[in-house]
Length: 511
Ligand code: MSP
Image (cartoon, rainbow, N blue to C red; front, top):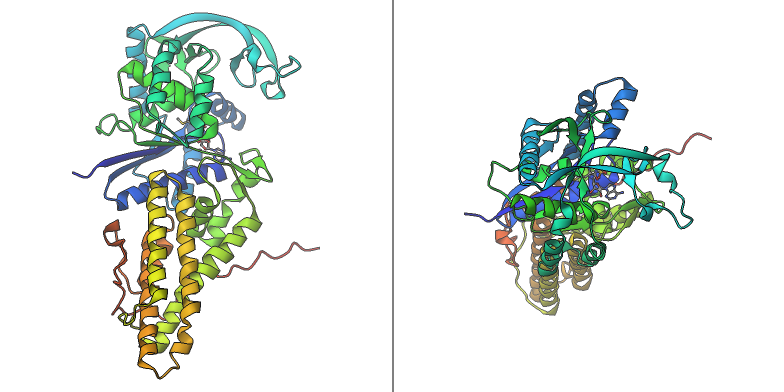
C-alpha cells in the first residue's frame, strides 16, 4: 500500500476576488502534492473556500443578493484561478456544504456535552468594524485604539466559549516535543513566545441578532459559531469519512499561524481526542512595492495576469523560485521579466534548442551513444549529483526555491559544458577522437535535460512534459528513472522547441 500524503491549503475568505497571495499558496501546495505523487505517495490534496462571517453577510447586503448567492459567485472566481494555475487538488471544500456543517455541529455538540464549551457574559471594549472584543494589549503606544478597529464602544454580550486555556500546558509540550510541527523552525519561537502568557478561553459564537450567516450551534438556536471554529474544522470535515486523518501538511501564511493554526486547531483536536496535524508549513507574504499584496491593494489581482500573458508554468516557476518559503518576497514586473528572460528563456530554453540543433545537424536528429568519457563529462555528472542531492534535501523540507536554485546551477553547468566542449569545432575535426567527444557531449546534454525535465514536472508540469517530448523522452509519472543513465541515446529528437516565447511588452499608453 503506498504511503498516504494528505496536504491542505488555507481556505480563502469568500469576501473578494482571488489575488497573488492566494495564488502562491495554492501553487506551493500543488508543487508539493505533485512531488509527493511522483515519489509514490497516495496524495489527497484539499483546498477550498471560507464562506461564512460578518464580512460576507455585509457585502451581500450591500449588493442586494443573499450571502449564498454571493459565495456561489465568488467560488466560481476562485475555482477559475485554480484551473488557470494548473492546480491538481483532489477535493474542494466550501464551508457552506452540508458535509462540513455536519462535522462542525458534531464537534460543537461533543465539546458542549463534555463541558469544554460553556456560556459566559462578557463586558468590555468592542470594535464594531472588526466585530471583536479588544483588550488593553490592543491599544497603541499612546493608549488609543488603532485605526483598524474603527469605532470602539463598551458592550456586554452573552456568548459561548471553548476552554482553550486548559490545553496550554499540553500544547507547549507538544510543540517542544515535535520540532517539525511548525516549519520553518524559526516560526516555532513566535508561537512559544505567545504561549508564555496565560491564554484566554476562546469565544466561539455570535448571537444571531448580530450575525446570521454561520453554522448554528446545535445546543442553542440563538447563536451561530464564529470564524475559526468553523473554518479550521474544514481540514477534518473534508476527510472525516475517508480515514485520511491526520493531515501531513497544512500550508498556511504567517498571518494565520498564531494563534489560529498553532494554538486553536491543535487544542480543538486534542479536546475532541483527535490527533494533531503533523506539520504546519508557514510561508511569508508577497508584497507589491513593499506592501502586503491584498484585496485592497488592487494590483495583487492584476499580478495574476502574468499567468495568462506568459503561461501558467512560467508564473508558477517565478513564484516558487522567487520566494524562499517562510520569508517575504516582493513581486514586480521587472523581477518577473528578469527571471522569464534569464532563467527560462536564456538558460533553459536556449539550452534545449542548442541540443536539438546540434543533434539535427550532426546526427540526423538521433541522440548518439557516448563514446568518450573525459574530465568534462565527469564534472557534468558530478554537477548532477550535487543538484540531485540539493533537490531531494530541499523537497524534504518543502524548500522549493532551494531545489530550483540547485537545478539552475546544473542547467548553467550544462551550458558551460557545451562551451568547454565546443561541439561546433569538434564537428569540423577529422579526428575520430573528436567525433567521440562530440557524441558524448550530445548524449550528456540530452541526459542532463531529461533529468531537468523530470525534476521540473512538479513545478512546470506542462512545460516540462513538452521539453521531455521534444528531446524524445517519455513523460514519467514517478521518480523511478531519476538517476543518471544516459537513457537519451538512440532516441529521435524534435527539430526545434519554443518553451518560452518572447513576449512583446504591452503597447505604451497613448500620450
Ligand atoms: N479564511 C482564512 C483562512 C482559514 S484556514 C482554516 C484566511 N483567508 S485569506 O483569504 O485571508 O487568506 C488565505 C491564505 O492566503 C492565508 O494562508 C494567507 O496567509 C494567504 N495570503 C493572503 N495574502 C497573502 C499575501 N500577500 N502573500 C502570501 N500569502 C498571503 O485567512
